[in-house]
Length: 285
Image 1 (cartoon, one colour):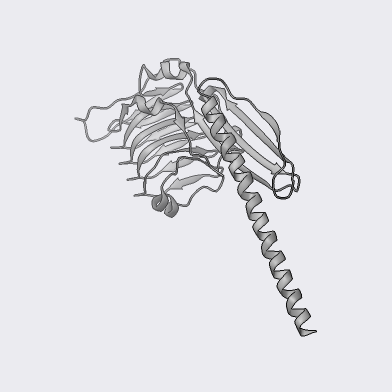
Image 2 (tube, rainbow, N blue to C red):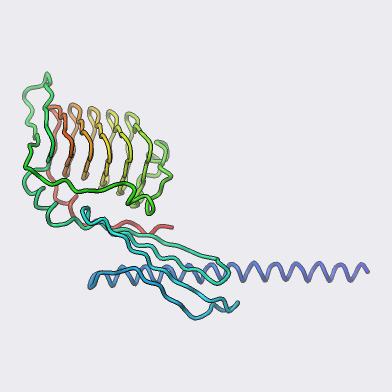
């Protein structure tokens, strides 16, 4: 009886290990298929516009599970945003997804920024400062058309786990889209490296002495306040609300606000066409 129990226990262990190995192999196969589809779609996009589609593939081996691939494409035309998602699933409802986005700004937006690095479609006010000798660049209205967007168009594709200040400083931006739905204040003295798209559904403050070293795109659905002595090395800021820029802050890139702006006369905004070049995110889970 004891020998029989040992044999039964050993046989069950072998079976469980075999099932675990099969499950791991199945997950790797789905992952490989998803990677292949998303890389092929990105490559094909150089020649033709990709569209949503569904595909049925040969059954997986082992297991003989049928495989379905869904390619989803969503666009925000005014921003030139294209979101791509590939989801692979089998008949046991095991699935694996990958996402990627690109931003290729429409000609109308590029032409507007050819005029000035700062465009305010509402009213502009320049705050006085004790320092009088600094050259400053301030914006004026060109009757420009502000690109229409909503963070709700982005929500399904972005990471809604917005990093903490510690995580931002430690890990930087990783080339993906980060969405914050709540009012937020990035603390004083924060230094963030890396490229990425930051979308804010509520008021956002980038506090004093903050430095963002990489290429960033900020999509602010409400008010955006930039404190004093802030440095944004390569930034495109699109603010649907009111924009405030504090003293001695330097923004290299392009800035556009819809409702109006208060810009300190010692703030410096320099044009950089590189922030208007196509932006491609990493491929993300």
